[in-house]
Each structure stands twice: as C-alpha cells, then as structure tokens.
Amino acid sequence: MDQLTFETLSFQEKEDVLQVTLLNLFTTNIPLNEMPEFNLINPNTIETNEKPFSLLLTRHLNNLTNNLTKNKATYVHQNSGLPLIGNVSFGITYRNTSLIEIKTVTSCNLNCLYCSISEGIESKKHDYVVEKDYLIDELKKLLRFVQEPIEIHIGVQGEPFLYADTIPLIEDLQNMEQVHTISINTNATLLTKEIIDQLAINNKLRYNFSLDAINPEVAKKMSGVNNYNLNHVLEMIRYATEKSNVLIAPVCVFGYNDQEMEKIIEFTKSLPKKVPLGIQNFLNYKTGRNPAKAKPWSEFFAWIKELEDKHQISLKVTKEDFNIKDTKLLPKPFQVDDIITAIIKSSDRFPHSSIAVAKERCISIPDCEFKQDKQVKIKITRDKHNIFTGRVIK
Ligand code: SF4
Image 1: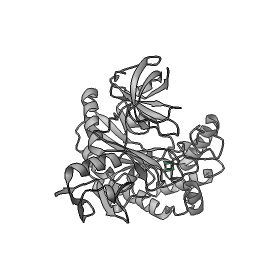
Image 2: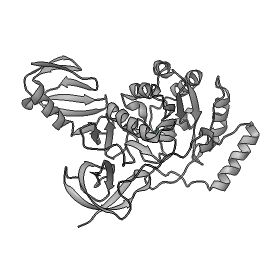
Image 3: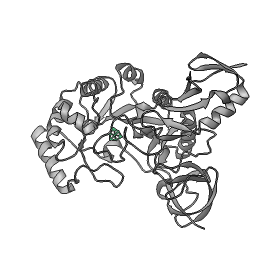
Image 4: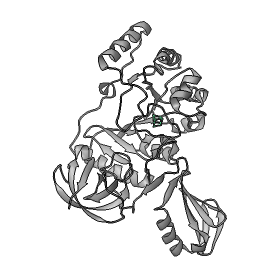
C-alpha cells in the first residue's frame, strides 16, 4: 500500500462511505464497497493502493456538494478542462486595466438582504471552487502578457475567507513583484487577529470591508442571519486598521440602514488610522435581492454631500483614488456573432445552464442542460472583456 498525504483534502470514515472534504467546505462520498483496502493514518493521510484510489477520487470529486448550502459544486483544477478566463463567477477577469479580478470560490456565510447576486446560505445556485496553484499559474501567464504593475482584486461571489486557501493565496500574491496591491472584499465575520497578523506583511494588502450598520438589530437584519456577530466585525475592522490598509464600503439601502450611515461615519473616525469610507448607493439588479427601490443618483449625491459637509469627511471613493490605468488589450479568440464548436464541461451558475469550452475560454450557455463532454455548436452573443456567452444553434 502507498501512503498518500493531501493538503487540501481530508477524509473521514462514515457508516458506509469514505467522506472526502475539499478545502473544508465541499464534500463527496466514496462508497466503502468501491474503495480498495485502506487505512486512515490521520484526516489528511490515507494508506491505500494509489492508482485505483486516484481514479476513484477523480471521479467522485466531480460530484461535490457545498456543506453550507447543499448546492452542487465544480472543482476547477489544472486537469478539469476548465480555463480560468471567460466566466464571470470564477477564475480571472481582465478588463484591460491595471486591476485584475480573481475569484476563488462562490459561497457566502451571510444572506444580506440587499445582495446584488443573491448569494448566501439560502443560495440555490451551482458553486465553484478553484485550485490555488492553478489560479496562480494562470495569473502569472497573464501578468507576463500585461507587463505592467498590477492590483489584484479578490472579489468573489461570496465571502473569500470561506475558501480555505485564501491565506496561502494572498501570501503567494504578496511575493509577486509585479503585484503592488492586493485588495479583498470581505464581510469580516471569519477574520481573526491571527489571520490579520499573518497577512500583515509588506503593506500590499487592503481589506474592503462591508459594514452596513452599528445598531446590532439593524446589522443582523441587513446580514440576513441570526448569528451575525457585529462586535466581532467591528473588532476585526479596528484591528485590521492597525495592521494593514482598510477601506470601509457600506451599502446604503434607504428605508433599512440609511439612519446608520452617520454612526458608521463616527465609527470610521474613531479608528486608530484615517481610512477611506465610500458609501455605496444600493442598486436594483435582476439577479439580486431587491428589498427597496434604488435611490436616484441625483438624490443620493445630494444626500451624500449633506453628510460630507456635516461631518467634514469625504464619502465617495472613485476609480481615480486607486490609480487604475488602461493596459494592453487581451485578444479575444472569438467575437459576437461568430459560430464556433465547443465542448460542455460544467454546469453554469443558474439552473438549466452550462459552461462550454473552446480555445482556452469558458462560454456560458443559458438554457442548455449540462451533459459532460457533449460537443455543441454555439453562436457567441457576448464577448466583452473576454467574458463569453453563447446560444446553442443547430
Ligand atoms: S456578504 Fe456580500 S456576498 Fe455575502 S450575502 Fe452579503 S452582500 Fe452577498
């Protein structure tokens, strides 16, 4: 027998299955009657016959469930056949600027009542989790192409600290010379002082905190979960301010938390360091939760101006504040109206939709049932920034 140790997988023997957990969040079960002889040495180490076990594992990792939501999930790894460019939910989004967005996971531990992507513990969408080393390798290729100093923005559809490899990922990014800034959107609930300390090296990291209220009842209502720990969130924001760069970015939903904004201003002013505060206007999205109607921009800006004058603070954060520049255009392998042949490789985020792959790009196909490795003829309907959508044609 071979002794196999895994960093990202853990094993637990249950009644009639070997439960395999990927990155602490996604699970699959291998029936014991399919397993070759094995011994669990510890949760990450198994003694077994490597070849048949690897085949079994590969097959069962195609059948992952998110433990938080019970949604089905796809593991996007080096050998999954899924490129990291082309889909808006996972991988790498390059909009021809010096800010490159990376998305490691889809999932959230909150359920904010205004969430623009309806993410959270009640989400009923397909999820993704990306192998860290695959992401880093593909990012390095893109950085070699771009040849400019870059900000990497970790802006996942959900909470990035649910992804167990977020800390090593940030450490890898901190070591990349071309990366001058790493920004991460987080709700702060899963942060600890130890994590903040560990990531507080070389001044590249900036936390973009969502903080929607100071009153605990309002904060709980905004978060959509009963166990929202506001005190912990405030403590983590305060601690992070001492150790790294911080931006506070509340979403103001009029009729729900507009009364909280002045309290958030006071809280921000009380932090040990001056940090930018950018109040965002809640907007209505087709795919989001829409508890209220968006405030017209003119009214919103007039209201912001009043608050700015009253509290002598800037409450707007713009692209210019982050010095984002235009960079080289990444060629698109196909364009709107092209007809191409592609292979279906995964379910897409919404029910009855799939992701097909061609020329190292993912293409989302709505209204197309998932059928692994089926060849389809597609007419491209969207190509902006190498994010592709298509329609199956006969
Ligand atoms: S923390 Fe962000 S991703 Fe999660 S539910 Fe709230 S708004 Fe959505």
